[in-house]
Amino acid sequence: MTTTQSTAQTPNLTSTISTASAASTTSASNAGGAASSSSTSALSALSGNFNDFLNLLMTQLQNQDPTTPLDTNQFTSQLVQFASVAQQINTNTSLTQLIQLTQGGEVVQASSLVGSTVAAQSASLPLQNSQATLQIQSATAQTGTVTISDTAGTTLYSGPITLNAGTTTWTWNGKGGNGAQYPDGAYNVSVNAGSGGTSGTALTFNIVGTATGVTTDGTTPQLQIGSVTVPVSSLRGVQ
Image (cartoon, rainbow, N blue to C red; front, top):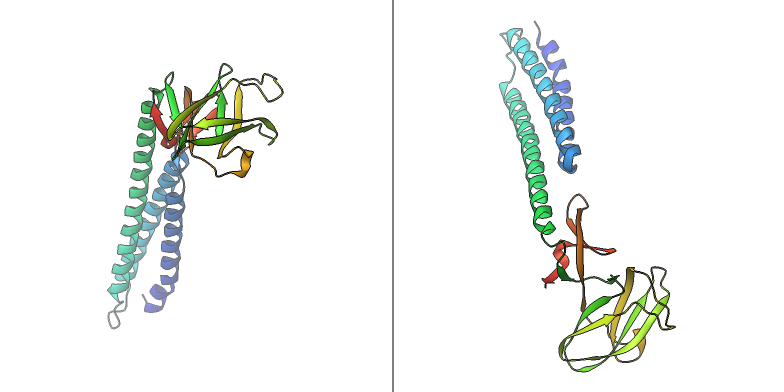
């Protein structure tokens, strides 16, 4: 029944709070099912620590020296810290569930685009049924150059195009400069002003193709256009 015995337990309380706070931070940084599992585990651990803390508090209060009572401000502060950590863990769990529901809704909405012709901003061009289409934007009427290469960077096609002021639609039939027919798939594409290949100013363009599926990378819904996958946020139109 001494003050020394009660004071010796205080560093353990601070360590306990630090452990609970670390568990809460870890829970906030995870996503999906892993985050939910971590939040539940952290909350369970915190509940156990909180019960131990209350038992220790009651023991200290019952055995304190009447002539030198313990400072209750420290206990009050620790109670507030425990409550704050518990609230943060619950908030993180709720936010994770909300994010999951929102992502699920976005995937369902995006699935309605499957089978539709869509335009999206991407440097990858999908060749579907030996056809790929670009919508090229130009401020003035001029000559441009379209360059298509494979994933290794080898140029397969490079040719001039007459651009109108505004939007010009251009279609590639999948044939290279040597007349070879390339298979359906994803190809790199660039459009530059002038007839000097890639030496001119780069122009903005959208790829056009048929949406074939919807996936998610865990945070953002992805739309599949043949062999090309783009974020739903890169869509520029549905035809």
